Image 1 (spheres, rainbow, N blue to C red):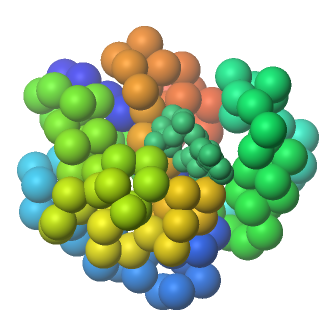
Image 2: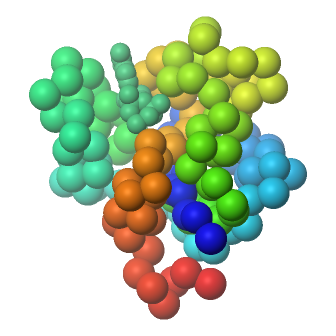
Length: 137
Ligand code: ADP
Ligand code: MG
């Protein structure tokens, strides 16, 4: 079964909408295989977003992702990667479809409530970034 990584980002945790977001994931048929609440270090956030390090928003992204606790969640479902991207909506909430997580809860293109893996291969890598095999149930 396919896996993807969700991270409920600092803005959503600060607004106390993490429960509503988790319910949306469950209602959409995703199984939670692992979940934790953590404060990312600067080094962890830099490493996680390494693919974006040449982008102009990289430093702001690292600062934002370390600005408060986050909730990484390993999700499992048939077609988990594309189905989860559909559920969260576009990166910019202004472009996200009605009923998506980002349309409901994202404040801006930068502070956009949740992360989602962009491919099956990256889903495996990103789940492994936060969870080892013994933590995946
Ligand atoms: P997604 O999270 O939808 O896969 P990207 O991988 O392109 O989007 O970007 C990673 C994260 O970087 C986004 O979720 C958002 O928090 C931030 N980001 C992306 N583009 C911008 C931008 N133009 N300005 C500020 N922050 C951005
Ligand atoms: Mg991405």
